[in-house]
Length: 153
Image 1: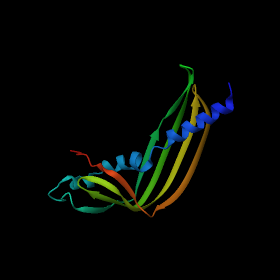
Image 2: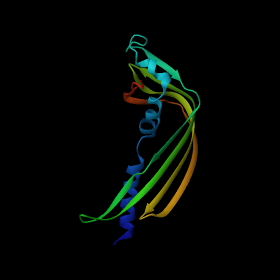
Image 3: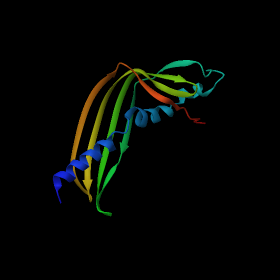
Image 4: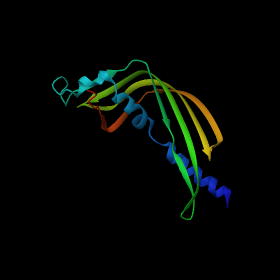
């Protein structure tokens, strides 16, 4: 086995696995469950052509993920690398743009994030790392088609 080539391929796939869109796949699902957004589902209170800016209180979003890479030789799986990903985001000053019962984007905010990544093979942890970072959302984020606000009733 040419381990350098294997490691390079694992690295490529890991980048793809970890590129899951924090705003759309982590933050938006948490925001969809906010009771305070329920009124924006009512088209009489908030007509579809109305855009509303909704400030959120300081809050935390925690998300865990367990992607994996199957190790294959020809058509046979010889093992599996399992990754444990944990994200914890402390958010403040976040303002959501809401229109037509959907979260259309984020206008402003700041976050401090902590993340950890661990890799295991056959119940043996191979490595683990942690990082912390802070950032301001200056330009805003658009959710192309908007994230629907579900009925929590």
